[in-house]
Length: 311
Image 1 (cartoon, one colour):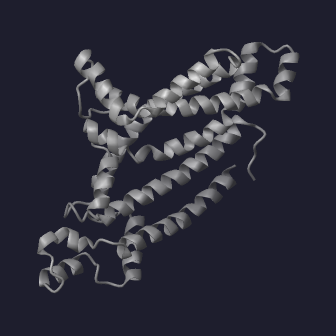
Image 2: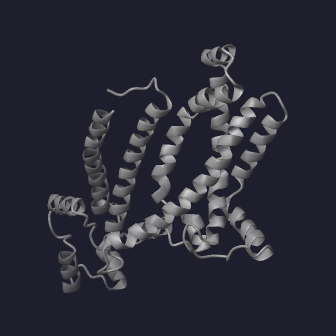
Image 3: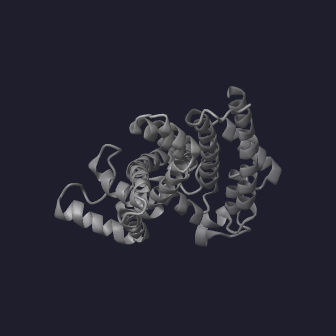
């Protein structure tokens, strides 16, 4: 197992190099010169101010020199300085916002997983009854409601009607203000987990080893917990791993409407402002998160299913 983990981690630098090269190339040769964005109407390609700024940013150097310098600084933990917020390091700008988005995503995942998985497991045992299609239809109906409708409705109930939470802002994971964004982001995911858990549970219930376990006289609780639920979780792990990887990506719409200082809105604004150091840092950190989450899923498979072994 440890050899497999080390071998997978060894691929991480190569993957990050590929992602960084593609992103860096698009940033340098794509449309939108950061110097033009920074100077606006004062931009003059022949002025000394433009030349000095381009030299200060290192944009006058060869492409390969710029790329190697960026990779070397990134490895040392230096993500560069923001082009929009001059003099401020990118690390200080994005890490706090990523942590805010991660807390919000964890709360939303608790809602999705905490409701979706048990509900999907139950309705799989209700197959053929009216509760099965009714539950799936209700979950899909909730999933189809746009966020622009969900947020005002929740604010009207929890903020204006019941006065449980403030109407906007952020106070941390254990603050009441996380309730509205967590429900808004978590409810659409319930339908996906319900359908996936239901299908996975039905597949396991039809396996021979379940009939064998029942024929041996095992208690129903033991069969359900050790055999059905445990094996039904195997395909769920993949979805959970990608959900974990997306913790730092944030939600642009929810963060904008509710005034949550997360990375989602900041990343979108950085794209429009051609703030390439921010875009590069967010992309590389997100790529690292996806690789590590995929590795965590593979390791979890071995713990859930003893038949899976990695050499």
